Image (cartoon, rainbow, N blue to C red; front, side, top):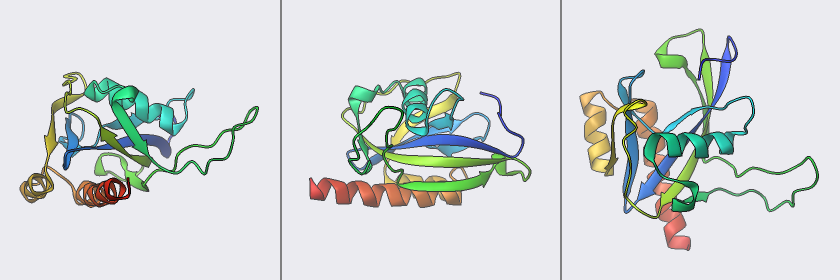
Length: 165
């Protein structure tokens, strides 16, 4: 999707864990490994965008995933509903260049299966990676400091969620 606003766009990303591995895609525009995700379109909220982008980029449908995040259990009423809280939010210069920024809602999910589909239109590659592999990719320069930080945080949170279940 093209940028909607000159200065800021909203994006949503999915940090998906399965058996102590995290799912990353090799983004064509950024030329680096990132979590699946993309722009929030005008007719959707960040969670809807995250589900759409996740399925487009990984082949994983909503029923194959578990979303972690507190929605505060506030009942929906006419014209009002709450969203699950992202595990992280950040603002980043688009493609590392000042002038246009993305405000990202990062969600933590658990996959029920490791079966994924490479969306060649979206990414050069896709795969499940251990934390050690992600650290090695960071040393090679194909994973940014910001992605490494969020992946590390996601893995810790997922282990805590699993222990609490």
